[in-house]
Image (cartoon, rainbow, N blue to C red; front, side, top):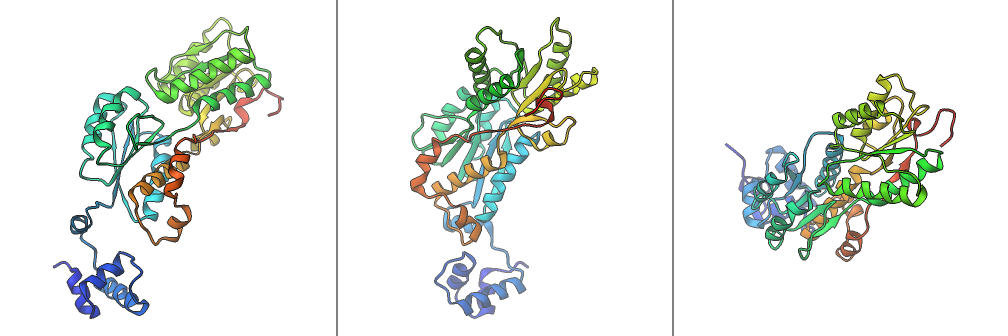
Length: 351
């Protein structure tokens, strides 16, 4: 038979309301009473009934997270950042994916309604999320990651993909590279579009006589490997390859090394994101670092601020984002940082 809050109140010789205030971290409970209630709850192995708490508070104590996919280091790092902040605030996560298929995104988002207090949505497919976000936003706080919305009160948090791509091209040109190929991401992906735009504009500005060299990609290792094979068969190879994300850069790197080329002596290879694996391959990967876990954590804090969630956890108070900071921070994209490693310089060259 399960232990109820009434059992705890009876054993601690206090009211049910006092037990509720104690377990919910309210401050209007005397210290000796608080300790007695917590000790009794622990001895009885009492666990609050989640459904009952939801009915009384009209809160599920759960954040929804809807992502394009769950496969790969980028998404695991993003969820890790979200989860860290959620745990600081004693919240749970309900995570779903639409497997990179925009047509399934609407179903994934609608499935969250009534099950979560707020939503974190990564939707690089701009056209796909607009109508469903407008439908859900009036009743469900939403924070978009790497996407924009015209819906009122929908917060968005993004990475400066355009500026990061420009910075990488600037670095490669400053390092002496003149034939710079670019492995693009999916055509309908917001991140991929901005990184391609940054590559093109930096190349046109700094090397006006150089031709673009864009190869198709799909943000996975296989498309990076295929791009590497295409470069190997070209009449004149590039002296640098900039991939729109690290997974494609690693696939390309494997293709070139497997063919016997020296990286970076024959061809430099660079990426974007700085997934954990980037520092453990050989040669280690030069890339634009996006603090992916920080991106997830920052998005979660914005959402929690909108929800008005209270927490007595010291870490949560330390990192809390005030409501008056929300509008300011929503317009500040996360700036990637250039990380120079072995794959991005010529043999015998410096950073």
